[in-house]
Image (cartoon, rainbow, N blue to C red; front, side, top):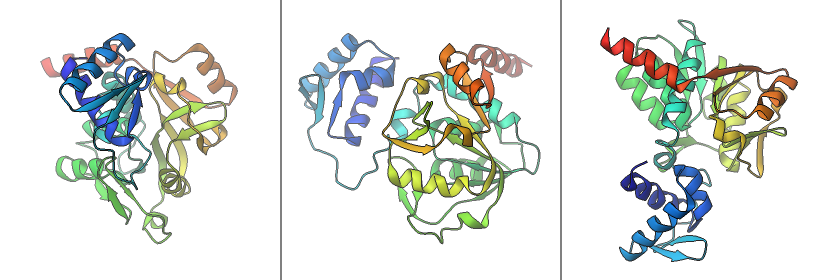
Length: 270
């Protein structure tokens, strides 16, 4: 990842919470901790952040009331090749006319690139997904009522009468903060509340998680592992995670970013 992109991610992440650690940014950017320390030092000299022991803090702390969920623009470019491979596999599960639900994540967002010619009935709490599908697809798009959280590009409401219960889907495609033996993890209670309502409106739950998500943990559980029908991930998934999924009786689909890139290059030449 280029230095300019790493700096953008650091500055975005520090608006999510007032202090970030070197380890946090290293995981986000897949760069070494030594590289991240140099990036933090450079941004400190520029006056854009303050360097502190083990990380950095914001010069102007973020306002109260923000979601704990990571900002959309921070995660969007992380593991992009893996997310696109996973997204393509997810769209291939959809038949013409299917009703589906997409949660507001950067992995589910990548599905929009493969949905342009499909006529699907889509419910999503993602402002970014809804906007893209309205402009660039033949899908019918529904969104719940609620407030728009700009940083996460999410539409969330704590109320029951937000239109979600009027939509029923064959599958709910869900990104996640982490996946473990205890279940699917998220980082914000309001996000969990919204996604649990969406879960009740679908027959199957399809989790889309790149292989890094099997190393991450959160203090909040969205749902137990047995609620999941299918997990789509990339070929970097650890062996212990494969065994965990198989033991839970969950269908596992493994996408290959390299194979997809070759396939897309061939299509563009043709």
